[in-house]
Structures are given as structure tokens and as C-alpha cells.
Amino acid sequence: MEFEAIIGLEIHAELNCETKAFCSCPVAFAKEANSCTCPVCMGMPGALPTLNKKVPEYAVMLGIALNCKIREKSQHARKNYFYPDLPKGYQISQAKLPICYDGCVELDDKKIRINRIHIEEDAGKLIHMDGKTLIDYNRAGVPLVEIVTEPDLRSAKEAKLLLEKIKENLLYLGISECKMQQGNLRCDVNVSVRRKGDTVYNQRCEMKNVNSISAMERCINYEINRQIEIYKQGGSIQRQTRRWIDEKNESVVLREKESIGEYRYFPDPDLPCIEVTEAVLLKIKSAMPELPEIKRSRYLDNYALTKYECEEIMRVKAFTKILDEAVEHKAPAKKAYNYLVSDIARLINEKNITPDEIPFGGKQIAELIAMIEEGKITSTTAKDVIGCMFSENKSPSEIVKENNFTQLEDPKLLKAVVLDVLAENQKSVDDYKKGKKKAMGFIMGECMRKTHNRANASILSLVIREELEK
Ligand code: ADP
Ligand code: MG
Ligand code: ZN
Image (cartoon, rainbow, N blue to C red):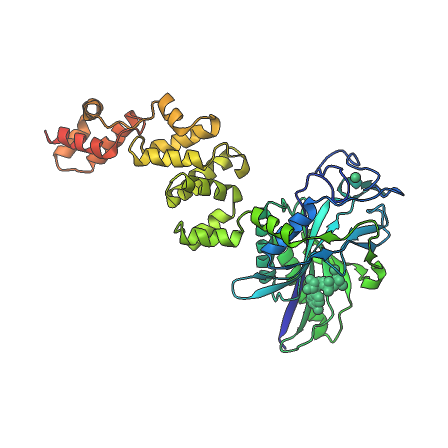
């Protein structure tokens, strides 16, 4: 009997806002516990929420990126539950009228429908310690968007591709840091299985605590196998919320799932509806950064990068920014690309900094490439110049000037070097004269070493040949 997996994701992304969703407390990571709180996010009686206007703006940007319809008037709703991570006794979320709905994301060969994107506030953090529980409310009220897919995914691989696509959009729009390890981006995974050919869905389980993309893949594959085994033995699946324990590669029951009724959703009377008028929508659209899909096709078409190169560079947003700037300053795209993924990537690794911390931009890269093309420096010297660009806040031409990096092209000057090298390496000269043309390579290398790689290679080799043939 063949089975088929049915998967839907609920993705939570913390938004890059400076302040919380409904109060002016700062959004901060790893600050002293409960130092970023106020009467609103602590749920004090009488304190009233005010919506941070960045929140719907960001949600709408994401909605546009994921091909959603944007609701003109959407509504906040209270999701009631009693648990100490939210002091109010309810979470402000959206229910019947989410801000974005009916979207889709294109994977390689299929479309995954997006049911909705809604706005909500994050809960506080419970820290269980020595049989006691500590609570940190710094995260309570941090703005989130929740993206809910239709159950259109059929494998762990598809779920991975979808999550990567959504993450890429969040990052390129600059609306979330997307650090899964820090809980910045979280994903709940819904899985059911059915016999191939069946048209109705079976009961599903929802897995929480999935904190990396690879953990999500493991979690889905585990759950698919678990459910198939149960069906094979004639059992049935109970609707459950389960907790994924990655270290053990297994999941355990967290609770029998609460039904929607238990949350007693109702419109929040403390907040007016969120209005996104045609004018607001236009304004948001026109201020939006380039979407990753569009960047991708631009790189393929205009920059003539291969598909592979395109994926390489798209993985690092900071690189794409430098690449675009370099091209704006007339650098050939492919050359700029090569410096980014090779020398620059290596140096940021060695220096243990992030790509966002690169201390120069595309303008400097364009200048460097121009100097190579104009023959001012050799491409070997260019590598040294890049090294200096990381440590000195100077332009490539300043660095070249101060370090005497200019290419040596004067035959007279090169001849002096060559004569020195020949005098020091009589054996190689004899070898060459006996017909061992390979000796030329060694002499060339020695001359390059003496000039610190600054010699113009073709002029140098002419000079060497001339001297040897004498
Ligand atoms: P609820 O509000 O009860 O959590 P939703 O309808 O919002 O349920 O669905 C939550 C998630 O579960 C969605 O991502 C959806 O795609 C997924 N889902 C719904 N039904 C199934 C199913 N039978 N199998 C797998 N996933 C499902
Ligand atoms: Mg749900
Ligand atoms: Zn607050």
C-alpha cells in the first residue's frame, strides 16, 4: 500500500521593528530580563494598546511578495488562553479578517497556496530552572507575522524549499532577521498521511519546537513514518500537538489539540481595524526593495550569471548589495561576482566577521577592477589591495599609491631585475641554453617574487627571453 504525505506549515517571523507591536517598549534580544516592559505589555488593567504602524506595513510588504490579496479593513482579535507567558490572558492576533490572504509561492514545478498572513504579538519566555519557572516578558508583545500555508506540500523536501523561499523574502524585504536558532523565525509543522489516490485528508498532528530547516526535514520524515506505521497496524491518528526533540530524533505528545472554540476568538474592542487604503498600498509598493525573484532573473538576464552563480550570491544578501553597486559603477558583473565569492568570502571568514560588516562597498570594488583593466595593478596585487581594504578605511587607489602597488611596466626597470635574477641563477640559464625551456618558468617566478608580483607579466617575459637569447 502506498501512502502520501500532506503537509502544511505555520511560520512565525518576528518583525525587525524597533518597538513592540502595541507599546513603545524596545524590541531587544538578550537584555536583562523584564527590563523591556511597561503596563501595556504587562497587561495592567486600564492600559491600552496602540498599533505600531510599521507592523501592518511590513505585513503588507510580505503579502505582496507572496502574491496575497491585501484586506482593506482587517481586524485584531483576542486569542484567549490562560498561561503565564502572556500576562493579559489573551494574545492579540487576527482571526476571521487577517491582513493578507489567498497568496501563493512558486516552487520549482508547483504552486503552494498561502492561506493567510496575519499580525500577532509574541509571548514571553518561560525559563524552567531547578523545579521553578522564571518568566521574562521582554519578548511579550514583540510583533510577529504568521504565515499559514494550505496543506499543499507533499514531502519534507518541498517544505524545506518553501520555508527557504519565505525566509529569503523576509530577509530581502528587510523585515525579519530570520534567525531560527534565536527563535526569530519559527515553524509549526502539520502532517497527515493518506493512501495514494484518496481525495480526503486524514487527521493530522502538529509539531512544535522545530528550530532549524534541517530539523524540520527530520521532523517531517519521522512523523510521516510514525503515522504510516500506525495505519499499517490498523490504528488511527488522534489530533495532537507534539514536541520535536531533535537530539533524540523523535517527537513526544505535548497535548491533545485544543479546538478553535477553546480560544474563544473575538474582535479586540481596544483596537480600531487596520486600514490599508489604495493610497497606502501604493505607497508601500513603491517603497519596497526589489523582490528576490526579480533580482534572480535580473542576475540571470542582465548580469549573465549562471543559475549556480546566481544561487551562490543570493545566499548572501550583503554580497548582492555590493554586486549591484559595483555594476552601477561600471564594473563587469562577472568580475565583481568573482571577487565577492572568492577573495572577499575568504577574508570575511578569516577575519570572523559577517558579510554585513564588510567595510567597503561596490564602488570600491568597481574602482579596483578598473585599475586592473587599465593595467595599473596586476590581478595578484589586487588581492593584496582587497586585504588592505578590510583593514584600512581607504579607497583602492589610495592604497595602491601608499603601498607602491602600481604595476611595473618599464622594460628598463624590469631588465635590472632580470639581470639580477639571471646572475643569481646561472644553472637555470645554462639549462635554458641547453634546450630546457622549462627553466624559463623558474626565472619568471623568481623575477615576480623580487617585484612582489607587481611586474607586468607579458613585458617581463619579453625582457627575460631577450636576455636569455643574447
Ligand atoms: P487550525 O486553525 O486548527 O490550526 P488551520 O486550518 O489553520 O487549522 O490549519 C493549520 C495548518 O494545518 C495549515 O498550515 C494547514 O495547511 C495544515 N493542515 C490542515 N489540514 C491538514 C491535514 N489534514 N494534513 C496536514 N496539514 C493540514
Ligand atoms: Mg493554527
Ligand atoms: Zn511595553
